[in-house]
Image 1 (cartoon, rainbow, N blue to C red):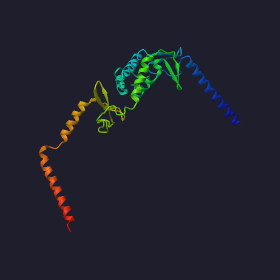
Image 2: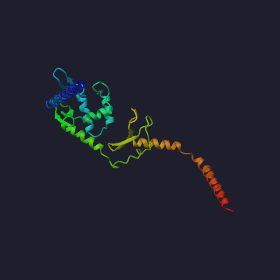
Image 3: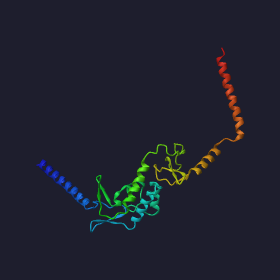
Image 4: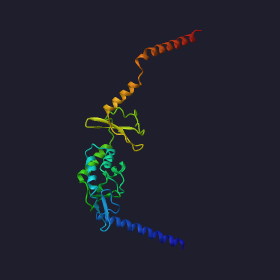
Length: 240
């Protein structure tokens, strides 16, 4: 009897799972997203549809447009999102990972990706297909190795962030090289610094750390004296 009961339970669960999957497929064919709406949209419960969030959709379009210029990093867009008060569905600040996920989500150009397949959505897109493709192209280009395209002299393990200890990275903008914290250790308040300003900081540090000229001659004399003593000792040891 116990085996029969277990068998009936498994049959019920398998049928339930298949019915859920069938329901998902039917929704997707109708262009309906069978889940919680992403940032920029609302689940309209009465009609079971997804509608635009009028307070956020233009802000999201701005994030896409900025990244599409190729002049903004994910970290910069995270700060922009905070400045324009673009938040997630729980009204919390967007993280860097959420920005990255959002820019890769075809839902915003009217498509639904589910289990690796794309379906035409019935919801209103926030960005055009052209802008979405442009963003993907920028993301793909930045993901490729540069093979020494840039020679950032201060990114070879020479420095670490003074606030959080993370590595330093660099990029070129409008003909100038900027260095910044990678912020991979913890949230860090440090901002960009131009290479010219960084060079001045190094020059100041080296100048303050160098020995005064007045010390040079006495120290060289002491070194020569030590070398002479070492040489005489070595000769004495070789004499039988």
